[in-house]
Each structure stands twice: as structure tokens, then as C-alpha cells.
Length: 256
DNA sequence: ATCGGTACCTGCACGC
DNA sequence: TGCGTGCAGGTACCGA
Image 1 (cartoon, chains in turn blue, orange, purple):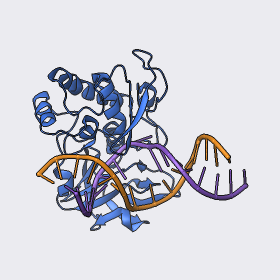
Image 2 (image 1 turned 90 degrees about the vertical axis):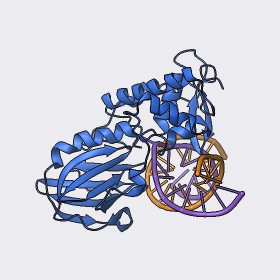
Image 3 (image 1 turned 30 degrees about the vertical axis):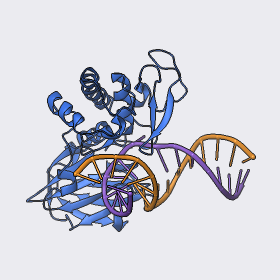
């Protein structure tokens, strides 16, 4: 479910509710989604996003690192549901974690986990020069590269397809001209920025901390539009599989 | 050391 | 009505 724009929206909608509050109790109903020591007694110093990870910085020390996987929801004062796996009682309300597929989870630790700390630069912040350099350093299919969080962090399946369409790049391309690389950097940051402004894409599960859906799914140009006409040329959008994920593209606008 | 493939899990839409 | 199949915003881990 959640890529950079969705995670950013959760962080922004959650922060005002929980910043400064103390964790008074923690009920972990499904133990395998929680790793590390109990955060009870710590207070929440800040809420931020690191790629697709949500970081709750704790006081006096430590982090609660949350990943939403495909269907995770981190909500404020939400009703308990079938797949609500963790409930944190804070000073002034409840923080709940609900996740049907349990691909997500959370980890409490003193330092930021290494697997999170080592991710590439944030997709919204990476400067052009860094992007071009990192693009040149790899030679897998460009779609796979965008999905690789060690390359840049934050891009997932929807926004990879949307950025490649806007840049006119075939998802299987392994090398990209300088001109296309520049376009891709711009396209990636523009589409992510527009999606943040629209509070993310809600296809089935995604909601923010206040249980509100996003609206960017109404602005997708290729993702989920297999067989529908390209918005630029009318050619039917094609679906292929890359890295075991669906890829949607226009065969006329995105040549190899 | 990069890669490409597989595993992890539940729910839903679809065809028969 | 039920059953089998394929698909879904993601990451971790394996062997080549």
C-alpha cells in the first residue's frame, strides 16, 4: 500500500496527536509484528519519515521504527478491528497498528536499525547530480532500480510506473540517456510531490492516521490502467511483469 | 558483489 | 454456493 506519499501523509496526520505524549501501555496481540524492548515509559519526541519507514524518536533515547508493508495502518483513536495487532495507550488516547497481510511491523531499538539507516537518499530530496551518479552505478532494469531502496528510498510500484511514464522511459531499459535521466529526476520528484499534495493514493486499504483516504489514485496515468488509452497518445496501456511486480506503461510513449 | 527469484500473509475478484 | 486461480501499495533472504 504505502509508498513515500502515503507514509508522509501518515506522519503529518499523526504527529500533532502523539508528539510529546508518553507511552503508558503496549498491547501486542500478534507478537511477530513487534521486535525489540518494550517502549513503555518513553515519551515520543518526534515523528518523521525515512523513505517508507515511520520513525518515532523516543525520549530519553531510542526509536520505534514502523513499516506499513502492504496493508498496514497506523491510526489515532481508531476502532479495534480483526487485524489490529498492536495498541499503544498514550497520555491522551490510543495509537493502533492494523495490518491484514502482516508484511509490515515495528521495531523498538536504541539506535536506528542498520537495515534502515543504510538505505539510499530520499527520493524527494536527492539532488540531480547524486541521482545521475547513482543511476550510472547500476545496470539492472530501470524499474527495478527505482524499486530498490538502496538506490533511492521511498519509491514503490505505483510511483515508479508513473515517473517512468512521465519521463518517457521503458521500464525494462538498462541504460538511460542523459536527457531521459534528467527528465526522470524531475518526473520522480514531481509525481511524488503531487501525490503528497493529494494525500496519497488509496486503491483499497490505504488511509492516514485519521482514517482518511487519499485521492491521487484519480490522477494515475498508467498504474492500474491496463488496456485503457494512454492520456498522451491513445495507445492502450500495457502490463508486463518486472521483478515479480506489475509494470504499466505506454508502448508508444515509452520506447526501449 | 550485484542480480534475479522466492517466501512471507490475507482478502478479494473472477471464471467455472 | 463453493472452489480454484491470480492479483494486491513491500521487504528479506537465498543461491548463482
